[in-house]
Image (tube, rainbow, N blue to C red; front, top):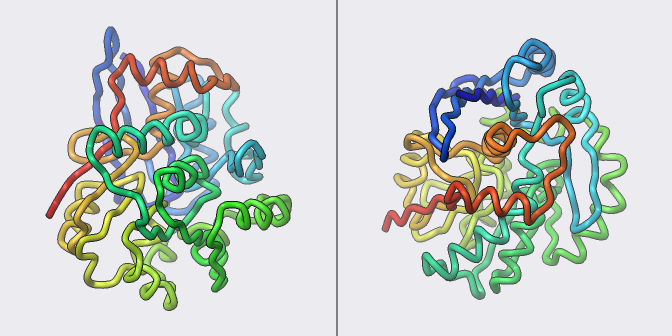
Length: 301
């Protein structure tokens, strides 16, 4: 049995353990939250290196991208370098290969209607391929990276404009501490006062769930939510708010949806890919087809 550990800078209250079965292999998965502590994350990576088959890194990115332009996030890359044997993955390669395929699957196989739907997207830098796929399906996107990440009242209404801004600012922003860019610990409960009206007007909310959670209005009736990591409590929480369709591009395990970093570490462990391996899109898609990888979708109302 192979073993995968996800080390997340987010809350330890979201920890879990599970086993999954692939053709010819059983994989044990565990998530360990460090409650915002980079030091604890570093120590865990060092202690697990060579002892497990894959390490996921959650709550922080190693790589961010705008189309073909790759940005390496300093703190995430520094953490990954504490492993000398075991691959440390943030989900980047999986998202790059899979998320366009996931949207196509949802549109053509599940009947998801996206044409002319308005989308507020919290973090396009983290999921540029997903944002592009939504646009190609006919959705109208407002990009909120500056609003949700930097707390600046700035939105971009086109991927082209966002691309220009990102290419100018990311050489600096990639060096900032993650604590300034992403809600960790108590900051996950701090609300953006000027975001609720935007959310109420949108048909679809897309992006990282932690950016949205504290900003959500009481009523999300008839909205579509496209996100990533979800616990069973998150799913009930969103259902009770009236969300009509809940989607993750990642599959479900035992009533919850692990993040892309977990799944990427699982895939590396299953395939036996080594440290610093860079799977191409076709190679990744072939592996996903082998294990019948499918997005998660729930129609509540």
